[in-house]
Image (cartoon, rainbow, N blue to C red; front, top):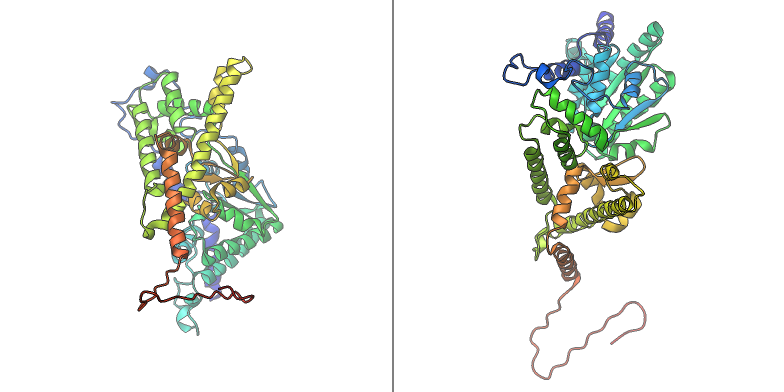
Length: 466
């Protein structure tokens, strides 16, 4: 039994050794180029060094901090990476892991089912939860009887012993990355699991033996963790600026070995999809970049309408859905208005000579404070669902923006359609009408003949009113 316990700790140490890591191995395999590139444009004809440092990913300003975290140089804190989906959070972590060959680092993806997450954490830590031994047959209770939370607590106890030994030997902390923690269910079980890891992160950061890194696309994990955080640092990851997006699109296009395009065409593409790296990665691989960007916009618009489309004269069965949709469009319409106002102010400044025409490309996504969004929507509880559906994004300053430029452009097309304001007002009036009917009670009197009188009394606990 003593040998088995020592072997468990040895196996966890191997999980943090340099070399093979499951998450890193998958990422490295995904970025390998195909051997047959005869039909693609050659490097000589493109006049570009395709082996330069920009060939795979754009090095962002946050990468230096991520590198220091993964190298174990940021001690005494734990971190949460917060930003919309597709901005490059996981890519930066994997790049930093590859630079150190995943030495001292383990990475695990969250999952809504805690039993699945239990197995994923065990795979990342090389821990079998006592399932690789028969000693459990002679115990009075099944170790798994308490559920996944207790199993994970046992794994963290073992990890703590390994981290203590590693810190004494090397003087550096281990790194544990929990990726996509927004996949946990936003219920008691999911929040308790997040709290369980946060408590460990606080203690390990204080002792300097292990640094935890959380990443999330949604805002709610930060809101939950903020209440108990004393050593948590937040790293916000946003879309690229227009200038950086143009440079990244050019280099992604050349790295994809597609034909070289003019800066004007690349600018048109960036104006449509914005600086989201995942969108740029898709559009730069297409033969017709502009056509594909417009196709992505039409798909985004269709998806947006499928989620929050307005239904005039709706039935009372879909009243709650239309209440959510109408409140969502109140916020999206305000985003469109503020963006148009910002564009108009910048154009007027250019006309007066107070600004350069190039500055029209530097206009950011419209931002509205969380407090003001509550007033606009009149239903603040709807904002979490919009964030989960990647329609809006909320940052650590409690500012709300459209999730991407594609969402904003799709909303602009819908709001710009003739009769949209009337449609929105009619849907809201219909919702009010249905709610009024639900609050109305009908009294029916039977066996009433001509000349009969009905006497109605309302008693509110005070004077009697007839």
